[in-house]
Image: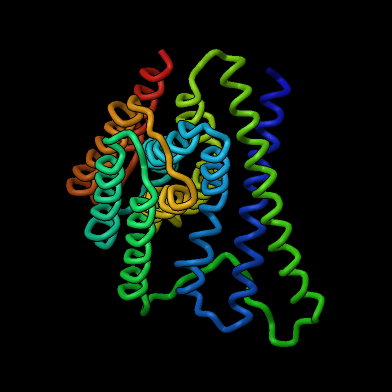
Length: 313
């Protein structure tokens, strides 16, 4: 079992490394070609940060463990809004912007409803994947229209005009390195998860909803905690809602286009209902409070603890 845990942790670390390297090198490459920071933020950064979950889901689909793919996405959405947001709210107060309440939350809830409806027949089919990915394009276009006047701050240094040829080729090499890390990291992550499920005698659904979901949500958790401690939390809730939208429209959309997924009935009847309830439950917190603080954080964390307890018992 210790070897399986080690393989899983090495796979997770490799996934995180690959995602980080890919974000930075691809962003610098795009900025070098005069692509605006807004476009980079909405496309390259967004897709790159979702790359670990995407590779895990695709590998899980091809290895015949769809519960990993669905559990990874549904579990990540639950952990983003309960575990990650709960901890961030306790560490530092998170203000709620009007745009988040009017645009990001409705889209998150609609995405969750669509996933639930598509899954009710026990399968996500190719054409449903195309619909999900098309909705992602619509969402990105709407983001571009409504935020084109905003200044987007990237955590990437813009390349200088007089940089050497080595610097230009280095980013290309780092993109390839990041892709390799994602490929092998996802492979080790799935292998470790499968073996751990066998060792513990639990279902792949539970491993997907807990271990894989929390693992792939670690970057969001770390980023949110750092942002909350610095008081830079204006976009914390919006970013997490955006991550949930990407998980459904991008990860499941692309995965289902590549390979149809059978959906575990328990995930439909239990886990997706919890995801919908949590997403809807955030609405009153947003309406009646101008910011999410310690009390909201405790409520969200309690929700997550109850959920994990019920699926593990």
